[in-house]
Image (cartoon, rainbow, N blue to C red; front, top):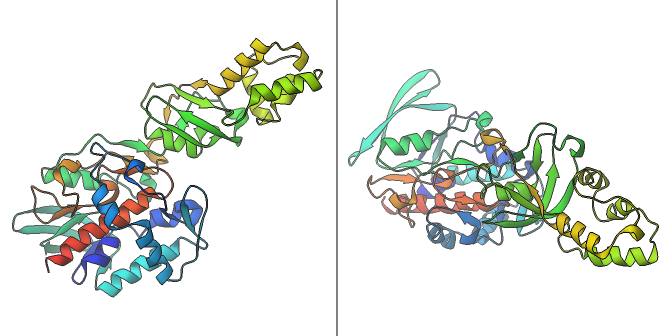
Length: 379
């Protein structure tokens, strides 16, 4: 939709869904985390970390905010530069549809692509719409169908398959921004417990909230780290980031030595988590019974809780697809395929994946504008 709004008259958007922008509608708890004020190339993963710079520099969060403001959509900042609608996310979808229509673009919903071919002389598509097979031709074709994340919403690997048919390379893809799973029942007693942590592996570290679930671990910290995690790797959770716990325990020991150690720890950590950790980290007895060495070891264990996920929840709940159409075959300025003139790839279909927090939407807007503007300039 963003691309079509900039490509202009004669642009046709083909969507197999019943409604446009479903990922927009469900994002941010229905309020759409539509961008992030801190958007920078460092917030994205790609085999070529420089590829995203051009599009992001030419269409910034400020540009999208100005568009939102023109449509009188109220918004607010939550944390870490994340911007949300005050009202429903459907306002963003309506805004994009209005921009498309104003530009003279057309949207066909519930339309499936049955055939696709092309080359130097343009592209031919066969689509099924309202019970009929329709043949279409075009000089510019944009692949904007995303990746495989959230298949229940109709997500498929269509863009990747189409790119391969045109001779483009596709990097390895995997679910990203996805919860971790653990052996059944591992954290069942902690389901619903949440706390701020520093979660890390050898490649990344995030200070965010962690949430225990019946299946394993979720929450922003987990979703962020999942993009950097590989099967079989151990992750490390600092359960007391920014807390001088050792000093606090020593002071309490002097003043209230008869206090139970677990009771004292529950002042800093959720009580259910303390009970769970007591099964693997010694923490019995009164504060007065604890030596300095024992308290230091306890704090070190809490700051370095090592966990090995058995896997992730996969495409079913992944918010985005990591990897995608190789940027080596695309222009970073126009998003056009170098080997197939007139073929463009934008958004999640490309090997550019953002962090949690509005970054992936900003990449969608920026890459869409880049391709749409390039197409408009040829007319």
